[in-house]
Image 1 (cartoon, helix red, strand yellow):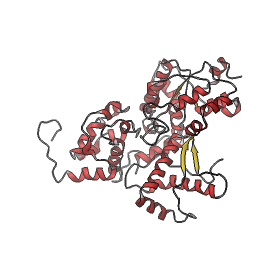
Image 2 (cartoon, chains in turn cyan, green):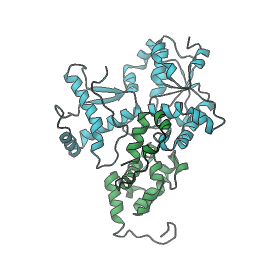
Image 3 (cartoon, chains in turn yellow, orange):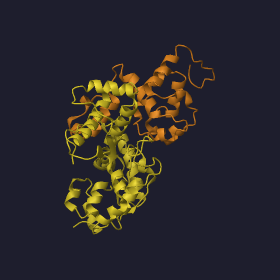
Length: 264
Length: 138
C-alpha cells in the first residue's frame, strides 16, 4: 500500500557532518512508516522504494538517526510538532531486495510470457550500489538485477559501465557533458548486443532515455536504444501489458517488442 | 608557491585551520591519503575536471585553500565510485561536499535556476532540479 502522507526525501543525502536540517525530510517519511504500523495499516515497519535516490536518502538518514544520538536529539526537537518522535524502527528496502527475499523461483512461477531472446543490459547507476554499506548488492559485482531478468526469461547482457554515473543532476546546467556520459553507457550496451536497458532510478531514466534526442544531435553515430524500468519488464513477463505503460517510454520500445513477439 | 616547484612546503599555523575545517565538515581524515590515485582512475568525470580528485586530496592535505577555486569540486557528482575503491577508506565524495559547502556557505551559489530558459525548466524532472539545487546552491 502507498505510505500515507509521504513527502519528498530531498533526493540526496546531506554529506556535510554538521548538516542536520536536510535529514528532516527523510526522517519524517520514516516516522510515517511507524505511524502506518500503529494505525494497523501494515504489520511491519518496512518501506519499499523503487527509486534509487529515495532508497539511498532514506536508508542513510535512518542509519544516521539510529547511530548519532546528538543529531537524533536535535532532529527530535525540531520535529516536536509531530505526535511522537521517530523511534528508529523503520526498515528501508528496495523493491529488488524484496523480490530477492521472495525468491527468484517464485518470480519465475508468475511468468506467463518469458522474455525469451530479449537481450537486456541491466544498469544500476550509482545509488543502488554505493556508497559501500548502503547498496542493494555488492558495489563492484552486483547480481540482483541479473537474477531478476533471468527469472523473467531474458538474456542478460553484462556491460562494464553498468554502475557508471549517468551524469545525474548535471543534466540541468551541464546537459551536454551529462549527455556524453549517458551516451557512452548506451553505446556500450548497443555494441555489446543489448536490445534494451533495464534500470531503476528516474533520474537515470531521464538522462538515458529522454535525453536521447540531444545525444543523437551531439553524437552522429548514435542510433538510439529503448530504456525500461525493470518493473515494466516484470509487468510484460507477467502478462500485464496495460500495467507496463510502455506508451510513456521514449524511445518507444514497442516496435522492438512486437518484432520479438512480446507485444501485440 | 606553485606546486611541483621543488621547494618544501611547510604546514604553517596559517594553513592548518583549512585542513581542520575540511576534516570537521567531511568527517574524513585526509591525512590517510597516500596518493595512489585509485579515486582519479575510477572517476567517470575527470574529463571535465581541472584537477584530479587525488590532486584535490593532496592540496587539502597541504592546506592549500586555493583548491576552493577548482572546477573539480563542482564536477564531482557524488557517485561514490572513489568511496568504494579507496584503499585507505576515505570517502572522497564527503571531502568534495565539504569543499563545496565552504564556498556555498559564503553565499556564493554555483548556479541559479532562474537563469534556465522556461522551455528547459519545463522538460526537467523534479528529481534533477531538487538534487541540482541541493548540491550546487547554499
